[in-house]
Image 1: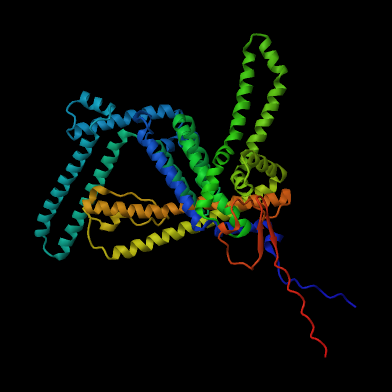
Image 2: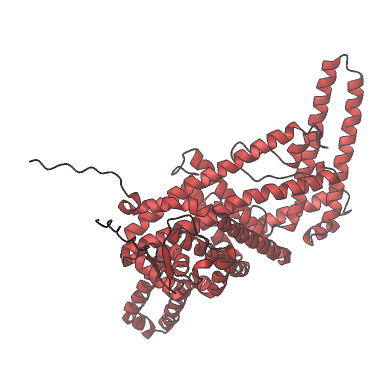
Length: 551
């Protein structure tokens, strides 16, 4: 008799293909508590950077366009010049232009007075007022000139053409004044954080646009802008504004450890038990583990620096005449061993950095356990770690692009229908809403610039309030990216732990009692929680039915 075939009635995809667990990251990341913590992280970093900019000396501020020029120097577009030389050359040009504007608008009387004021950055407010006054005089003259032409026009069509010409001339007058005000403000320099932040946002927007164009490896494509985001901006800040970088890095690390640790904690419980803890509980956990979260990524860097400095210190022996090079040659094997150790640490940190916070959040351990586990998982299963990371990056890019397009479409529809109800014209001849809030670009850019000089006092307040609401909505895109980053890496940690240590995904460290966790609807089971493990016991089976008595 032939054997009967077996019918496959279902496949547990998450067990058969573990990497599909990463696709849960979107659902985990869009939870409101994680988005709120991500938004708080962004706001804290932004406010800290702007405060640091406000107290930083004017002489140490960035030259407008400095990061882009540094990119050009690194890429060879600006040859035969260093960044310090470019800064001095550009600063001299800005001071010369400012001195010329001071004389042009009558703020300074002589060449020497203008040069001195430009060097000391004086009278900027007076110069801005002079530019605005001249613009207003030009607008008044344009209105008077075209009013006479409109009265002498033979018909309505001619009058309409005159009005359109007048509106275009007024628009040009406002645009020219805006250019001159921006050139005048160059004398103040640019805040280092503001310069860095704008460059990084610009690179993110270019990445999104090139994804839409399907331009990945071409010059100026996705890979180039990703490289610029991680290499150009940070390295510029590290090498050319080192003190500022150290202060900002400390603040960034504290914010990242506090809020990133809280997000990782919520994600850990969510992924392991499909349950959610409150923001308060997550923040309490992050505060208790703040030192571990903050020191985990720093310790490997300190190890590399200390070992490298020891090698450099010993290498000083090589300066001794005759015997120095001989001693260095004899001890060079020790330098190679030190290089081996530093290479292991660097590669382990690069590969396991994303697992450090999830380790602390899942295991409730410290920074040394985070470093040990992340390094061991990377070196035990390097290709699997690389594969999981590639899947997370691809999936994260797709979901980020979806959220970006969702917010863009939301803003476009809002702008269109609000604009239908506004008929007021701003001072520069454009529709009022288009001045208070320019329509989101068709290229998908969400940020915008407002020419407040074309608005009245009430319109300026309204434009400022619109800007706050729109930027808050746009900030949720960054909050989602942060939440997705920690959520996806938490799932990857569970997968790597299961692969290397054969630990189930529902094994998570818990501090609070069962009543403190918000359960999601699930079949009734009895859960016994210990300090470090979760033991699930099924409810007892009902007793077998008693047969009826035989009479």
